[in-house]
Each structure stands twice: as structure tokens, then as C-alpha cells.
Amino acid sequence: FGSGIIEYCSKIKDSVKVHCLGLPDEFIEQGSRQILLKLAGLDAQGITDKILSIL
Image (cartoon, rainbow, N blue to C red; front, top):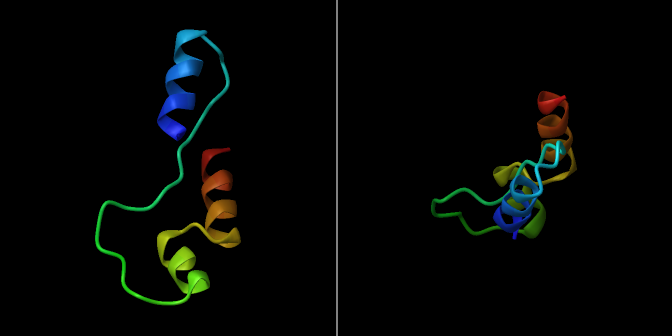
């Protein structure tokens, strides 16, 4: 889904910066949803850290 948004923004020459967040292309261990999101950097803190690194 994110790649579609990026493609659309590039076609309309929009100046909005778009960054995709998603699961890594690797095997993910078993665990609770909360643990898996944290390992992938997709929990609240991981998303916050990513946003702050972009700004």
C-alpha cells in the first residue's frame, strides 16, 4: 500500500515526503503482537523514533 502512495505522490509532483514503515523481509519469531511490533520497530516508540529521525 505504501508504495502506491509514493508512486502517486511522485506522479503529481507533490512535495510531501512519504516514508513507508513495514515489516522487514526476514523471518519473524513467534510471540505476542506487542513483542512482534516492538521487534519490527512498529510499536509506538519505534514509529516515534522513525518520525523524529526523519524530521
